[in-house]
Amino acid sequence: MTPNLTYIVVVGVLFAAGVTLLLERSLTRVLMGVILLGNGANLLLLTGGRAGGPPIVGTTDAAGMSDPLPQAMVLTAIVITLGMTAFLLALSYRSWHLNGHDEVQDDVEDRRIMDLADRDEGPGTDDADQPDSDDQLDGDGRPDPDSRRPSAASVAAATGERGRDA
Image (cartoon, rainbow, N blue to C red):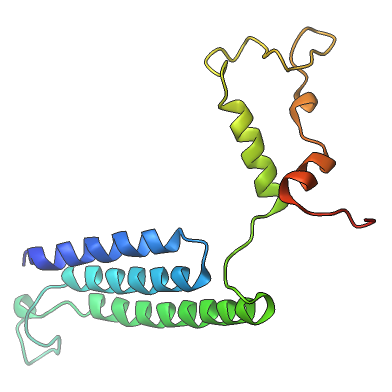
């Protein structure tokens, strides 16, 4: 059996919308993305099955039986999606209860990595062997890797956080 074109388009739309929502910062949108991805996966599994008679020995010949495996996999996927939905709903509710919103905050380490990536994407990245003008050189004339790391104070200033002793 060849899958219906409508099923394929619907699966593609569900996966595209699910991934788009999954990449958002709001936990409610992430929850909706997980639900759409789960439904898209269920429909994709069902399109892989073969239509036919009931898979009961004695009622249908072996060549005309439908494949029960996709249906069993869809039931398993429904349970997994329900568990993920309950977990993300609890996280979202807890975040809303504690902070008044359900957006995921930036991590200090993520901010530091983004700053380092921004520095590396600047001019002069085409020639990796030549040190940049702001690189400090070690005793061998090579760029010192520790000279490009931001200090803890600059990371705290970039993220707007205060130290523990402040």
